[in-house]
Length: 91
Image (cartoon, rainbow, N blue to C red; front, top):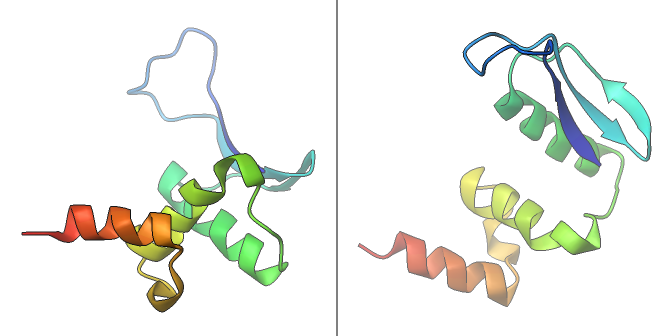
């Protein structure tokens, strides 16, 4: 699973990319998205809609995106993500 950004060679980060999209299992499933943020949200939606498991090496990254940043399904946090949530939500 990946979000990809294609830029013309030599272009800086200020220039809009040629394409932003999502690849799952080596297949491009979405392209021409408007931003990396929307691509991340779409990837989480695809994972949920297709009932896919988070990739094991970055399982907690996806869980933080879903549970803390997007505030979805917060009552089912793993202990590691909950501890991170407590640390960052303290006043």
